[in-house]
Length: 95
Image 1 (cartoon, helix red, strand yellow):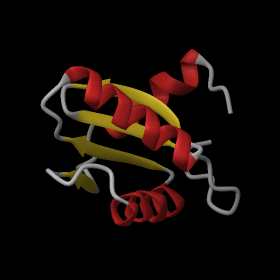
Image 2: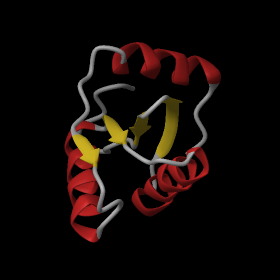
Image 3: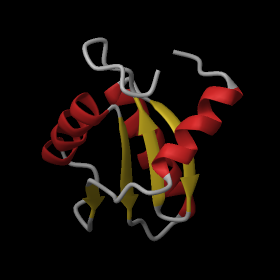
Image 4: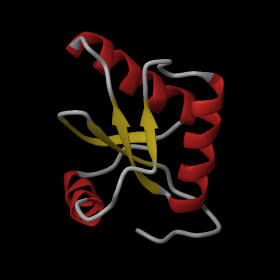
């Protein structure tokens, strides 16, 4: 699912007002947290996740793992926030 720059720009604008639906804590990316992210992205298509990691490289790895395991596209990552998008064929709220 390759999004164009125009589509990403539009999604970033939509994501600006969103609050994080999932927050990763000290336990990191557990299977329960991943299930919660999967559920949220299926329901909302566009979600914000707060990733608390001490090391910048660890944070990048966690964000990439979320994108890979949920088959979603990373739209934006600023500070501790990451925005993910996966189109829901039944919903298509951001098409």
